[in-house]
Each structure stands twice: as C-alpha cells, then as structure tokens.
Image 1 (cartoon, helix red, strand yellow):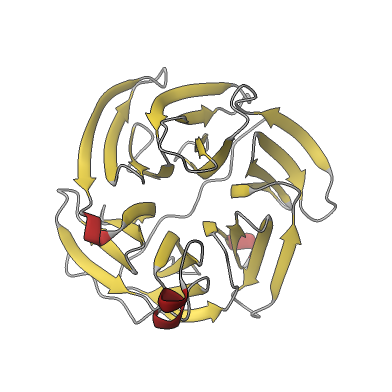
Image 2 (image 1 turned 60 degrees about the vertical axis):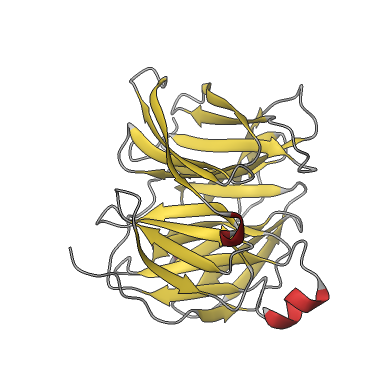
Amino acid sequence: MGFVKTSEPKCLWRSNNTLGEGTLWVKEHNSIYFVDIKKKQIHILNIKNNNKRIIKVNKQIGFLAHIKKHIFILGLQGELRIVNLKSKKIIKSIWIEKDIPFNRINDGKTDPEGKLWFGTMDNPERSIKNGSLYCLDKKLILHKVDRNYFITNGPAFIDSKNFYHTDSRAKTIYKIKINNKLEIIKKKIFKKFKIEEGSPDGMTLDRNKNLWVAHYRGAKISVFNKNGKKVHEVEFPAKNITNCIFGGRSLSSLYVTTAKKGMNKSDLKNYNLSGSFFKIDTNVRGFESKKFNCI
C-alpha cells in the first residue's frame, strides 16, 4: 500500500470565499466545481485552460451533483433543484424540511450506485440537533436515513452500503452501514477530534481506503487509514479547511476549498490565503464522482 505523499498546497484561485464548500470534479468539462454557501455562488475552474467562472444562484447552496451535460442538481436552502446551468432553466424543484425554515442543506455526494446523499443543519448554527441525513433515489423519492445532527458533513462512501458521515459540531466522524431499505444497521464512532484539532468537515476516500478529512479551524487535512490511524497530514495557509475531492485526468490531485467565515483580523493575517481554492498533488488516486442517476 505504501506511504501517502503529497506536495505543498498550491493556491489555484484567490476566490475569497466566505464559506467555500461542495467540491465536484466533472471529467467531461475538465472542470472542478465548488460553491460559496453564504455568497450563493457556484465557482467553476477549468483545469485545462484555467478559465474561471462564477454563477450566482438565489439561495444559499451547499453542494451540486452532476446529472448529464449541463444539468446538475443543487442542494439549496430548503430545496433540491434540478437545473440546466447553461440555459438557467429550472427542470424540477423538490422541497426539503418546509417545517424547519431555519434549516438549510449542507454537504452532499452521490454514492457508487448514483443515489444522492445529503445532510441538513440549523443555518444560524445554534446548539440544536435539527440536522438529518437524507437519500434521494433515482425515482426522486426522498428517504430520511438518520437524524439528530448539529452540522452534517460528508458523506464519503466505502461502497454502496458503507460510508463515513460527520457531525462537525460534535467533532465526530461516524462509520455507518445500511441495508437495501436504506435503514442503518450499524453506526459507530470512527474518529473524534480534540478541541485543538478543529472540527471534521468535508472528506473523501482514496483507492487505498484512506479517508482525507478537512479540519475546520484546524488549518490542515488529515489522512486516516481504515483503522482510524492518522497516516499523513497537510498543513495549509488557511485556517478553515472545508471540503476536498480528487480530480484531474489521473484522479491523483486533491482539490480543496476553504472559508473566511468567523475569522478575526489576527487570524486573517496569519492565514492570509483563507477563502482560497487549493490543489495538492498526491501519490494516490481517488474515485470519480458518480452522476446522479435519476430518471
């Protein structure tokens, strides 16, 4: 299996994100997509020609997943929206948690079968467990899989039945096993962060089953093997590391979002690239994100 090796983080875009999140590699577009939740923006970086674009949306956005061509599903506040990003045509809206108006959708990913998984959280970030974990299947039927989270993050899929999922405020990464009915049959604590480590945020897996975890308020990404042992870490000139995904032709580059939210003047001086978008070269390969497989 060998050791994990990485380059120093390279800043690709001083995107000045308040809350960068939701990294997505789309091979046929040669592009990495990511969002700024608070600025209601989708950022698109073509890694072939370095072309940069920003698309504005009308709600806070936690993530996006690719369906086909220019059609994506967006995780917005109170809404999953299927939209053509080129024409701006809205194809379908699915309303989420209408009874909890202060909640918003946070992180989301597709699983190896192309189902969409995402979590919700209390948008004012009060100390209340209003967050839930959902799965949207290919028939666009919504399943509530888990509940009682402060701030949902992840997930990262080992396979279609086993995945990691995080409650950032609780500083806890869970390992979860589900059955064919999308019911949890096993849930255990995989890793609990210490106060000085910050909070576990977005994460992704490489092909050696190592889990790459962003540290919010921790200025680094840690790499854990399947037994929970830390095998590597990468420090950043940014304090709030939020999300990461493997991309590029060989799927060996790790693309990383960061955030400026909540930082004071001293922190902004010490971590002067906070809010920027980074790349790390690695000696491992990740997985290509599945398209959301809806009818």
